[in-house]
Image 1 (tube, rainbow, N blue to C red):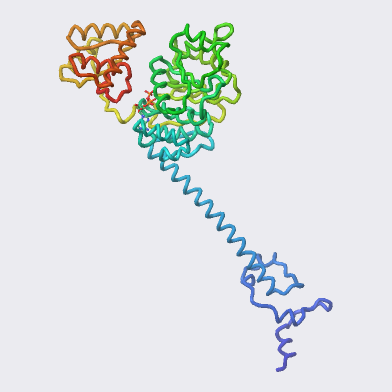
Image 2: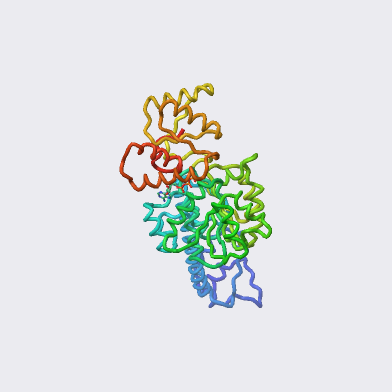
Length: 437
Ligand SMILES: Nc1ncnc2c1ncn2[C@@H]1O[C@H](COP(=O)(O)OP(=O)(O)OP(=O)(O)O)[C@@H](O)[C@H]1O
């Protein structure tokens, strides 16, 4: 059988159009193509370009596929890395009992160094004896450092003051002659003084002018229009500030406020006669800098505060540490049912008889109740003192002086135990407090 016969047999029943014959060269160059193994419905869409050699085409195709695969591998890797990082952050937040709500939330940090703030701030933190940030500081500080608005809820004693002080000190950098740039609102004078002390400690070496409105008459002249704006930070209660704002012309200028911090926000938003909501509105109007940022801190979560924040703070981030409205787990708690009103006093006497370790702090509902309990305990011969609004500031300052002397480790004498108790009343969060009732 010659070549012609073989060709004939192979092409039996096939027709070749006269003007479009496949050249022998093309047939020679055909190499097995993986596409040939595909089912017919896939093959249908494949167009062979007769002008190029098929071998060449496959080479090019393979090369392009390699490039694409390499690119998509890189993308995959990037994506996987991102997912892994997100998972790590989630895990870290869970481990620290931090929950967050909001968009593009900065990651929490692991150490003070990761705050990326000036070295002097870190040194001051270490001087205070702080070794690592508390959970609220880990999450709130990066948020405020990015200039985001924040509603933070963390248990009492969890370090909220430093959580807003660190970013503020970082943002302000140093003193300037612009008037107040930061306003910190606290519900009580005691809290304002406490915040001022923390602010002074953490900003050591920066010479900020940190003011607290103590005497209204002095304040009327001090911050008025004639003042030379040599102020940086104002820490106050809303009532005093509103009094100054109501003067004609206003006795204080707040138009340069860049940061408004509302500490113990839940207290300021309380319903009824103790509510500061109206004053807050007045203060907000006075802080008319469009660029100002607001940050709210509180120990309990209240819907009224959350609603206000959502309405008034664009781009808000919410951070909660621990379970909502739960106490810090660093405090042992015991709930005792005492039956009647009279049962409270009996239970307290019982507790004292069993032997309590001073200092002890007792909170009551009103100043009358405080005075009544004071009288009862004095009658029992217990060394006790009382602080309430009817006591003059002089009395309170004497108590503070005692507290200061005690911290100086004055020679021990008979009155020492009294000093210890006084100290506790002045600063409830003090670590020396052994029992709070
Ligand atoms: N990182 C830290 N490490 C150790 N102690 C800290 C740290 N940050 C703050 N503290 C200390 O913890 C105590 C409580 O802090 P702070 O008063 O700021 O708590 P708080 O959450 O504001 O409480 P409150 O809700 O009662 O105002 C203070 O004595 C403070 O000095």
